Length: 329
Image (cartoon, rainbow, N blue to C red; front, side, top):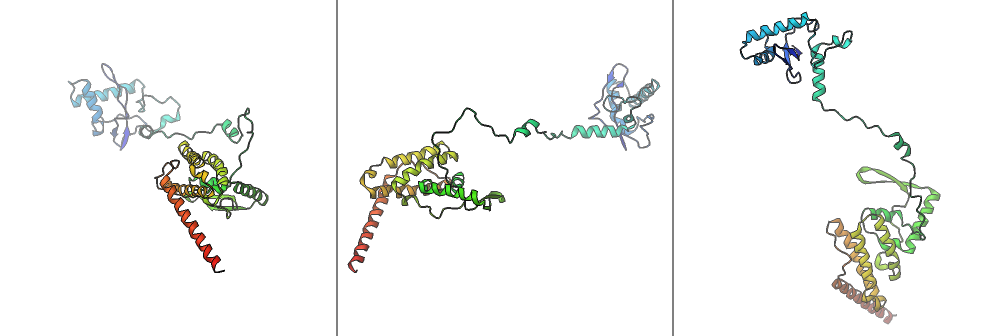
């Protein structure tokens, strides 16, 4: 069976426009639509068109409606008119597209209207492609009066992942080692491949993303080394985009440690402060990984006192052991 659609058939009082997209009628296969032969409107495929004709004049019977359609078809042919192609337009003379069968036009139009239009590929702007690799900067800005020392790549990577980093990497010793590693990598150009997240592979300078064998825990630093490192540490976590809350809370713990009363009681008390911050710093990162991070800037005096007692007990035990060893020498 072939599909054909009609539109704007002339009626006695007005022109009735049929929506071709929603009304398609079956034609017998014996009909040759190219030659525009007279269709048999009594066929079941034209039932909808017959009903529309009867709807215009409620006095018409089915047979009269069929006769009326036959008369109008004949009148259009006698006037030299061609049936519509389904879109309200007739092919111009000499146009090869006019030889296409009506059902092919109708099917192609229906498929085009039913399928959503896919967005075409957005062509990149030639100007953007040409300028994407250009270096842009504020031409009025100038270099700072003091340049911050750059920590090791291992340290930057750890901070970017929100992981714990001993403050030794921000001491003068740690920063000198980082600078030496950069010079050594530039001179030797030794590269290594490591696996990143989601199976991706990254290439970096050898030993640049490994922990230093000279690194020390926070409580193994001197109090002066620790306070020197804290400024570089704060700059590093700011560059790593930890956020203002994290930056403020670490700023507060350094402030509270530097102004604590134990600081005035000698090296043993300073050692207790360093043991406190060393343990709390590591515990904060453990809790952060579990989504239970807290305000590290609030000092827990009970925990600090407990750590001070442990250190005193350890010193006493060390003194006794030394005394026993001296006695038997």
